[in-house]
Every structure is written in C-alpha cells, then in structure tokens.
Image (cartoon, rainbow, N blue to C red; front, top):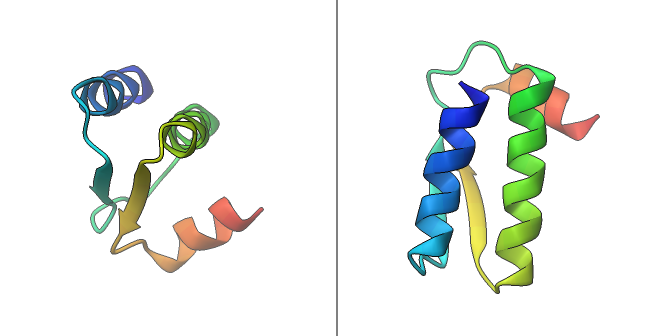
Length: 67
C-alpha cells in the first residue's frame, strides 16, 4: 500500500502537478510506512512550491498525524 501510494504521488509531482488532493475519507488505518510517505511527499511538495492537501481526514487519522 505505502509503495503504491508513494509511486502515485511521486508521479504526480514529477508530472508538474502543484496541487495534490488526497482524500482520506474512507481510511480506517494508517501505518508508519504510509505516514512516512505522506511526510516525504509533503517535504518534496514544499521544496517544489507545491501543496499536498489531505481531504476528509477522519478524526483518528488527524490525531495520529498530530503526534
């Protein structure tokens, strides 16, 4: 899951996308690998003046990301 997510997001940034929306509305679980992907892609987006926007994030995921 994390590898596929990383590849897809990386492809979007490589294609020159400057605004990435990631809908987490149906997410019930995130492991550390996925959190790492989100952190790395966010850093890359920031370095390229792009934005990663998480949409419809469940409260439990918000709490996890806040840690």
